[in-house]
Length: 151
Image (cartoon, rainbow, N blue to C red; front, side):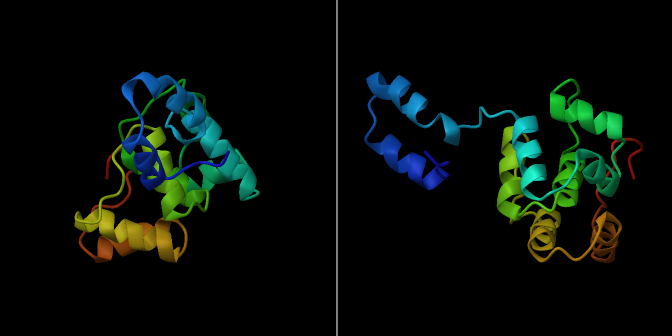
């Protein structure tokens, strides 16, 4: 069974009774946010023919730290770090939103100016992280923070 989007799941839930929740959950496990963030990201890396090492290099995220984020050994509260990894992994906006959900972080929100610009950037793919930060800066927005010192 393929992964269902939120609209499809909500439609199924409209006709699901509480007593049938366990069945619903088992049948739709692929669509739940239970798939580990690391597994999801590694699958995307493979689909895009990218190594973890290359993604972390492009994202300007220390390699050891990146591996620990994917394994779940480390957690970050910095959404920008996850966005850097997603962008470096050539992920679509839809895949990025899914990755943020799996990492239990807020998705990009179109009503927030910086998030809206980031959504456009994920759709247009203008260049590397340095160029992304130049675009953000040119529009008076904060750049994507790294895992270390805040900028």
